[in-house]
Amino acid sequence: MSTIDLLKWRYATKKMNGEKVPQTAVDRIIEAAILAPTSSGLQPFEIIVVTNQELKDKIRAIAWNQSMVSDCSHLLVFAAWDTYTPERINSMFDLVNEKRGYVNEGFEAYRKQLLSLYPPRDAEVNYQHAARQAYIAFSMAMVQAAEEKVDCTPMEGFDPNALDEILGLRGLGLRSAVILPLGYRAKEGDWLAGQVKVRRPIEKMVRQYK
Image 1 (cartoon, one colour):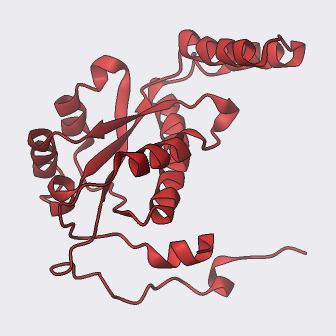
Image 2 (cartoon, rainbow, N blue to C red; image 1 turned 90 degrees about the vertical axis):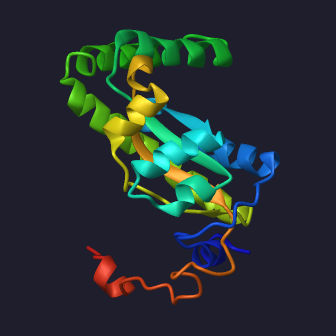
């Protein structure tokens, strides 16, 4: 199937059947997220994979009691850095130099520029910027899930402070941004299954300046 066909196939699954997703498929979904582009290549987020049923049940309770959270196979939590620090920025630039095997003068100048701009900013501004990068990876994960014929549900409907507490994210310098249950659609009980996918017409979505 083409990417367009895959996007037409997928939908925000509202009820999952509890069947386990093969680890090989989950690994590819996560790899797609890791390969996503991010601003300055910093990858300012982590992906927490929750399969423990007790934890999933706790998270469901702070996610508007949505059943997908507890009935999914794997729950992916995209957690962004709580701020940018010199250590975090330097670690990524150092990794690039290590993997490429040389030091580029222009790249080092860019490192200094980021170090002068990002760490002094307000932590909330930095978190919001990092969260937007996490969303890019989140989108890549959904596309790869469709490629694997794995259903998923993009979710912002949860209490982020409560989720951070459940997973101990603040102590790791992270804050939850968005979550993605992975699994398989239930044959019955999903009110959205089989519904026509509705999107605004392209002429209402695209403006062209020629």
